[in-house]
Length: 459
Image (cartoon, rainbow, N blue to C red; front, side, top):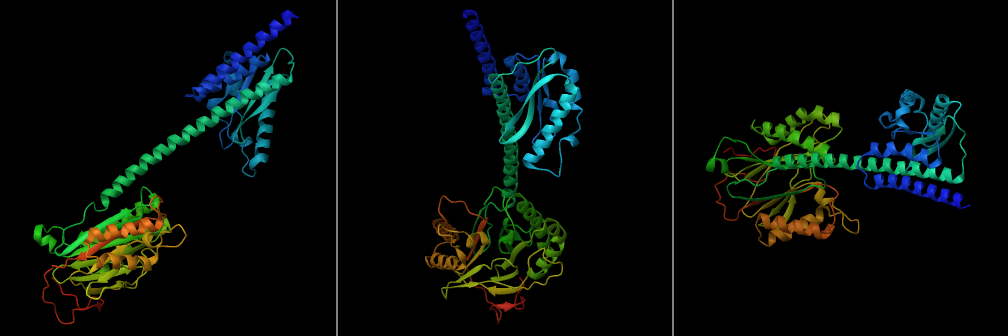
């Protein structure tokens, strides 16, 4: 009796040491292959079997041939080679999914292994991770019959479960590495895009400017720009020259929207050098971008304007973008600047229209994207244009400069959305204020608002 008890005690210690060794490798997990090499060895020794075979499957059901393991390793090369010869077409059935597909896969795998091991007696169990069968563990003896007990079955299943934990840990680590690579790429993309968006506002005679963009993701589809129509001019001549002010938005968010907006930026900057009026620039840009946008199944809204400091005339055309808001100082009234026109990329032949207006000292123009007016608050309401107009009027009446107006508008938006809440869409604002001390040149008769830019005076 004592000998029997001693034998059982030794067997228990041995089993505990075997499981502890597997647990240690799993606890200090750095190499999946090292863990899987131990699985058939530990499984065979726990039940006193001669050999064991671990067949690992990829998440899509195909054989993971690089991770096939068997014990003893020195006598298993031929077996592993024969198992690896099983074609994936026998395991992957596109017409099946879920448990039915896993059942068929296990049956095909068992049949193949049994054929290779005949007439060997074997025990088999599944390696299951997150409810998905990721492999099969076979324990067998070629020369003697196995005497199976419930303890043996539990031990083999425990080893299979530890293998599943290792496979899932490896999968999570790979996901984390992939996410880190994506994050690095997004960071690089965000840095490149940040370099393309103006990091400061230009000096334009008589104008006070401020701008801000808040992307919903690292890379966004919002765009604003200040473009000199005669970039070779320097100093005072550049400050007094005509400038293009643009705001746009690619439908969508993230990297695809950011890439398309970067593409459009290059096209637009080249088109501005032509000196054409706003309607012609939008027409040409629409044709140039038509093929690229059609392939991406995306569209762009764009408001294009140019300002002449000498005449204080702002010309503009709109491709279905949110109309900028104009605060008239003398009237203390907010108006919308709009002109008819379809989205960029919607159809090749589109007609745009140029409108123009003469600004007075103290007037303020707010360019913005729909991420501002469509921002949702705690109650689910949208910030909407009416709230933005009221906030703009209050900020302008306070006599703030462009940066002060922008800060107050941003603060109003943050209070509405919630300071700690992320915006659902990219939100950009550009504040254009005509200084109150600007010199007023003599203007031609009929110098008010006009259609098609007919009363515009060239500098």
